[in-house]
Image: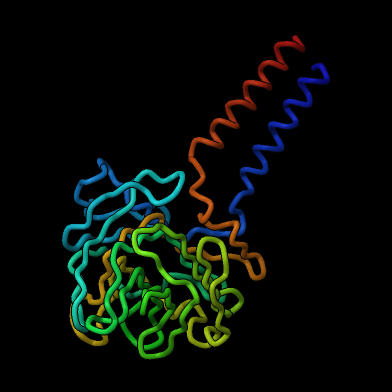
Length: 289
């Protein structure tokens, strides 16, 4: 094998190894692509029932008529649009996805877990005449200290837990604009990132959001999982969601670079690298022969 071929093969191996290590610190727990893994999904079509969790098997049931839209980031072709109207509290959501038995836990005992998604809020509630909160994603049971929500309140992103506490970020939502949000419980400290930038952190989350077993296996998108002891689902949002993922990570190893805020890696990238590497190796073997 001549020197130039050796260099090419070595470079290909390094690239493939580096790509394999990408997102290595995050362990996916649940992943709803909201389109790409739903059979027959296409822009404008009614959302599938259920929409598929490609990692954890927690498929979500469709309620109302959410529909597929173009994806919100590079590497995503489809997302899901929810047209919920706002009104005086309690506002009942008409379009959402929800699922889970609420009998087991989403995560094992860990202070290191996160939620991420892409969102486009199409309209915001008027806080003077309508319900002040509009929920993007809710996880856990509808009871004190067992629920975590990412929501919009008075135009800003907020992290909250029913009947316990909440904290507001400094990020103001612009209607019609896609953004990436990631909430992580990092060593027991709650941190919220928007488009890769930390927009709020609250050490008090160490007592309210940890340990993770408080979060049961109930998830809803574009609505809250229940309504403070009432039946049904309330506090829906007029928004589109895409690439919703729950994950864990080793203590001290979280990096925002490991999330999808730069886009979703194309599934064919590693395959192309591997094919190129095999081709180089075959070429080198033939030259050696």
